[in-house]
Length: 112
Image (cartoon, rainbow, N blue to C red; front, side):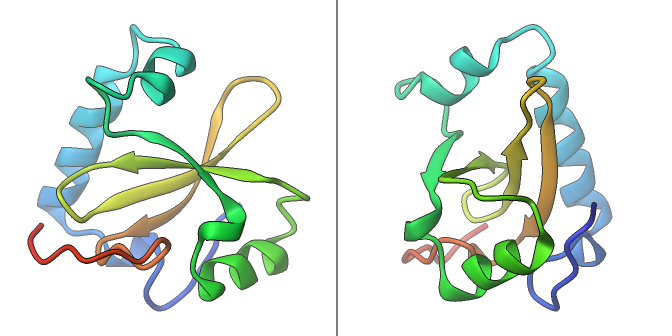
């Protein structure tokens, strides 16, 4: 499944960002999701409550048919860039969005 949105889509990823994402994902290969998502000191990646997401993101999730979920995974790729996904029952992450402008969860960040 691929969610397509003008501001939240894989069509917006450039070569450097794709390399950064690939390198980040490679770093996860020897770790568990527990280690990745719950290490507040060493990992910028985390679960985010769906009700804290932007209205656009919440609408896109409802339209996507991903199901009734309470949390979504945020993978920090740069200061501002995020990859967002949904954790599947089998422990795999279904990547939904490339978010270079940090629009899924709004915050005051000015640099990449």
